[in-house]
Length: 190
Image (tube, rainbow, N blue to C red; front, top):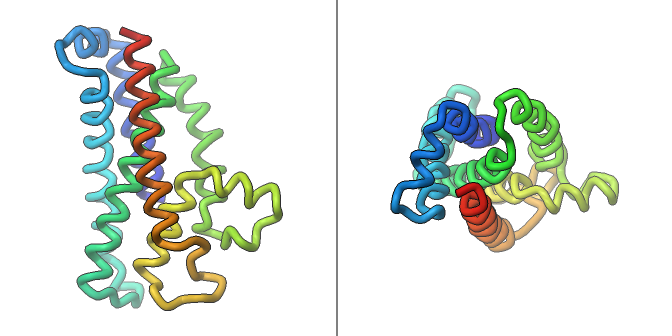
């Protein structure tokens, strides 16, 4: 939840930039649109990863003992998922001009993304139609990769639904697609 909320809401800065005219100044700068998108996504990624690391530091308090390798794996996964979700938020933010309309659509998208990610219920136990929707959700693969890192030997209901390679590939490819779409959307605005 920490990664999802902080990553996607980091893109709200684009709405503020549009409202105060700062986005026009950014778009006339002699830099590529992709660099703007990547910079915005990286800023959301850094904030989200720091927040996730703070939550991770609390794991021993609730009884989870993670090895150094597991901690590094989780932080790498958090970083990649944060980048993907930040890029998705940027794609959405490019199509909205006011903060109010963006916040409505965020509530319409965020909660289904979270509930269908496998964080609450295993994807394999969902009804067929919801399982299909869950497999279209990039957060599903991020949660699954975290399950691989945190519960490496779990095979029951709490275990991963996909292979680690599948999850990593989907996260990386989805991130690239979101960055390219956002870059094209910024070119259209320019």
